[in-house]
Length: 172
Image 1 (cartoon, rainbow, N blue to C red):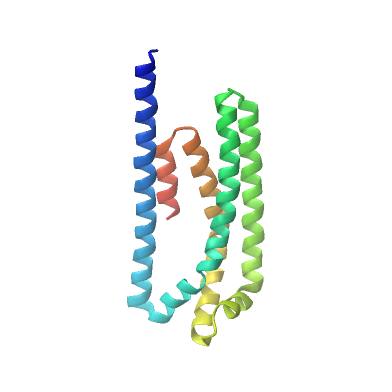
Image 2 (cartoon, rainbow, N blue to C red):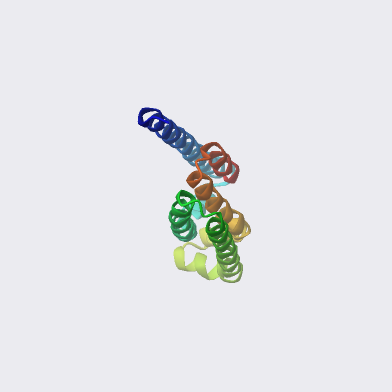
């Protein structure tokens, strides 16, 4: 294969990845916007405030999943380049088990300490109550969210941008 043809294939794959990833992120953020609008208009402004109050908690889980997902992806892409399928499978398994464990621990902590976390993050009792309820709801989503992010990063590392975007959209 000529270098010009190979360069085109790499550029084309990269463009597909960028377009699919960008579309998935836009869709994900759009879903957050819709949830916020629905909460603010149809439920109450306090509900919107409660969602805003727990953003540090959701950001913390996001940071952990991205740390584990991106760390594993770096090693996996190197193993894919070396055609070491055994290492790829092992890293993927370790990452999925790690994220399942981290998601379960995070969920348990949210279920046990949701009231204390809400009290720590907010001083308004009305918003505390809603934030506490939202933390309990979020606790149920912690494991699937964590696993979907790891799946997304691994699919992207394998050059499967379309599937990666579908996982991100489904997770929204």
